[in-house]
Length: 89
Image 1 (tube, rainbow, N blue to C red):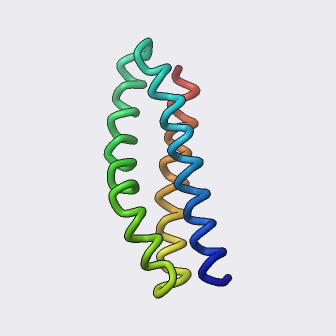
Image 2 (cartoon, rainbow, N blue to C red):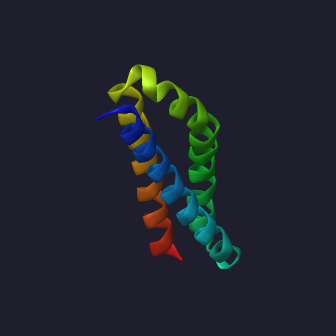
């Protein structure tokens, strides 16, 4: 996988997670206590992901697979959490 493909893949993960997060935030105001707790946990992970995303995009060209795998793992965790939250809502 070349650097441009890696950056695009990271950008796709970031954009997908961000979109899901934005959609769920709108529905959260009617949510149960459990859903709000899940949301708070996911917000901490999102904040970490968002804070590190630009660094990951920049480092992707140097580190290659390790950075991409870490970003995909974190993005996948967050997406799975959003799916769980969606079921609670």
